[in-house]
Amino acid sequence: MTAATSTAGAGDDIVLETRGLSVNFGGLKAVDEVDVKVRRGGITSIIGPNGAGKSTFYNLVTGAIRPSAGTVLLEGRDITGMPTHKLTALGLSRSFQITNLFPENTVFENLRLAAQVLEPWSRSLLPTSRSGIAAAKAESLIGRFGLAAKATELAGHLSHGEQRRLEIAVALACEPRILILDEPTQGMSHTDTEEASQMVRELGRDMTVVLIEHDIDIVMDLSHTVIVLAQGRKLAEGAPAEVRANKDVQTAYFGAH
Ligand SMILES: Nc1ncnc2c1ncn2[C@@H]1O[C@H](COP(=O)(O)OP(=O)(O)OP(=O)(O)O)[C@@H](O)[C@H]1O
Ligand SMILES: [Mg+2]
Image (cartoon, rainbow, N blue to C red; front, top):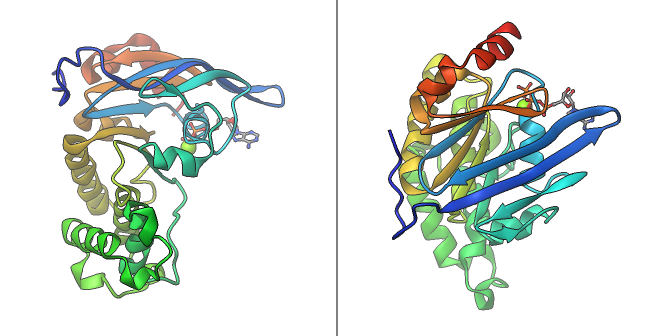
């Protein structure tokens, strides 16, 4: 199945691209000359066994660490080594493998703070209680993510599944064009995983989603393109069925489990 692109004439509309992306930790090539092209719209997944370099790749793309070689392009613009807050302003949002909520703030406050970048600069100095655009955005996300009953609850008091849901909502609050998620279902129960997968699928209808995941079964069902990393290198790329049938993937991936 080919994902439909939402932009006119965008036969080759690449949102995110890496060229020769590499980083070494001492003698270890954690990410080794990885070339990736992510097309606009739908869900592109990056999978690989534990230690394949997925989170490191994610950290390189989202500005948490600097590459030792290679480039990262966002909509054709070189963003290599750019700090995370600048990337957010350019439309790239991310969600952590480790939770990044403010546990002492309510669900509503977490969302409103994250949506603050939507306010025009002239209002950005107002107390957050008077920032109407951010508050409206927080309200709409609370509805969309089924958190209405929890709006005034402290984020730290939510269940694990609810926290992951809130985290995705926080990542969306700045209205990104591309969302990168690192194992959003990690540590979730079976039911929460199903629910979160549904949510990711829905997000892929609105924007470009890059899903980093090690559970091959989750991505097969969701993605239009799957990229496989193993030992820091790109091993395979293609439609889910094609990747699953790939002998190298089967050896490296399932052999490692
Ligand atoms: N900051 C670091 N310093 C040294 N080595 C690191 C660092 N971060 C990661 N590594 C190593 O780099 C390799 C890739 O790790 P990474 O966390 O990117 O894998 P992953 O694919 O995300 O694995 P998982 O499925 O467990 O999340 C591993 O061998 C890891 O031990
Ligand atoms: Mg990881």
